[in-house]
Image (tube, rainbow, N blue to C red; front, top):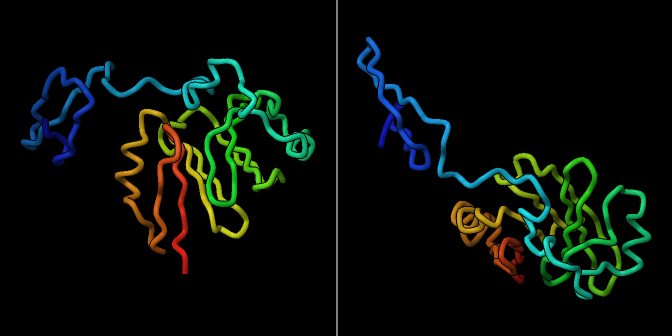
Length: 176
């Protein structure tokens, strides 16, 4: 259905159309939607948080020490995937946040990026190493296909996004 200047409303149920004196049509949209429910828990982003932590999910001791004062639950991490230079782990943080902890290969702490769960499905969480030679993007499990379509398979430098787990994308630079 097209309304409001041709905007396409695929995910909303239309409850009625109101003709305005100018001849334009205005859509009246119901409160119900077929859009995915909002993300409210870390397990909504990384489903393995609803299961017991495995040995592979644990952060190295050097990383635990480096990020001990961040307020993140480092003892309850989940392994997301690996790139050429980094391993990526998810952790929960107080106040409804999710973080990606990056670990250099071999096990040296590299960095941590966090975002709130509220609105996570809109963009997700994207991190990069200091040299910008590797980037990772954690997206909503329901939005992986959309993220791949909107970014395409290559960025402006020719580097390509690769899906390394259900909802983790890694930007692999091209070799020169």
